[in-house]
Length: 119
Length: 105
Image (cartoon, rainbow over all chains, first blue to last red):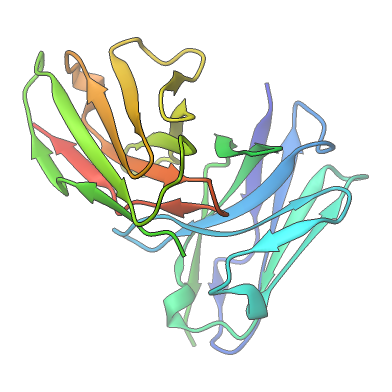
């Protein structure tokens, strides 16, 4: 079955760029929307954005100016870059799959990766 | 932005109880609502979509209802494995989650 695995640095300095990758295994990355969602410790979930392999993307308006997402179909991977990070960006970051076409719910999730913003 | 508000924030219950969690949207979202279950240290697990459609493999004791701005998740007979935090998510416009309801013994 399809599995997702996040990877990337666990510690990022303030004002720098957070970079994460999600590897999709057990299925194709094509024809689905791939999402990033984050969760600060002990708090709720915040959708960051989504992207499909055609290049179409949508971002949370509150984060849009700092988010860049990309997809690499040859590696079955998609990536997140979040620029100018602050301590408020400290969270567990999840990648997740959505079907698209109005079905913007997340049926498969990665296990999550903790990212701390600190000097 | 569409805001999602869940109630209660915490719910104490016992095995065998029937429990209901409510999720309210700040504007109509038709039936574009999903529910998730999250246990400590784990990713959320997808339960229900389109307000009342059960994901494959989810036990039938879980059910969802509602439309417009008010929705409910009901667990008909609580099992030990059900004690977790539950989140609703609207997908009428992008995606927004409720703040969560912690179901505890």
